[in-house]
Image (tube, rainbow, N blue to C red; front, side, top):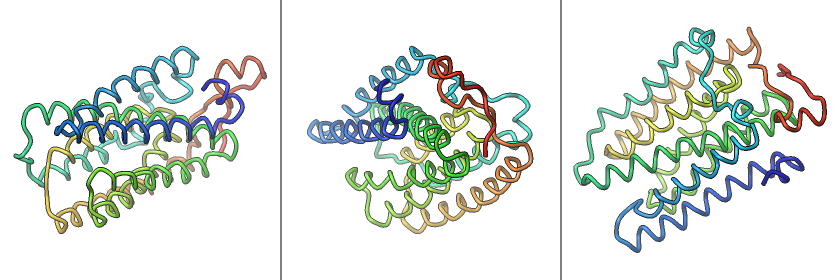
Length: 262
């Protein structure tokens, strides 16, 4: 994988995306055979999360791929990330899904902890930085955000209806663009990781009909539109967070330094 990263950063990101999709598919199939949702998928993604974290750390890529806390100077520019919290809280009125038992809840929590970490690192870390290296920040924001949303089409295999899937894709594109803007502005994927985990857990532990989902989706879009416009304005005013043009080890070999591109 490291050699692939050196030869083609975008292919490296896509390889991890495909691996994640395949492993989730295998896990879901095995979980269904056991009669317990997420029973196999959750452990598989725990292992993948540990492997991916060790892989990034061993290569000295933690900071490059945004696995660091945002700077205190970024808090005001990002409105202290409060719009992200608002989007999570919009899920609460849906009501708890009383069909879930204790083990179901534990499996959802573990699964979504891993999904939040993996998807943010792969989409807002690997893919975003790969596109930024080759095409600049603007394209990285748009392509990584839209790809993240379209990638949710695989949830059709997880039992979602066509209407639910369409809503998920549209909402995921909006959220993906906002989270990509946050990475461009702060250089950190950690706010997105925390938000992603909380949003997924709150979504999976609650239940509602299609009409309620439409209302919540509309509210999330309003928040994304306002927050995205604010982040884009901040990005124009102060520019993107500085990052090395290539990961540290490659920068040492090539002599590349830190850049602030658009």
